[in-house]
Length: 68
Image (tube, rainbow, N blue to C red; front, side, top):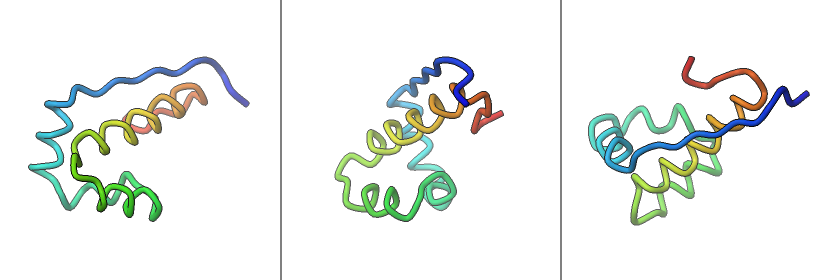
């Protein structure tokens, strides 16, 4: 059941920093399909920001935040 609306945004600078500092942590956020998409991306920080923000906003709408 959807409890409400969810919205999330991630600054590209923060995404770029995270991808650079913690490349081994990326896999913990992504499904196998998303990992393949990320691996093919030339702009990995943008790909990470899009996928992470989508998951976080969906989880907020469901009342179960990914990061909290």
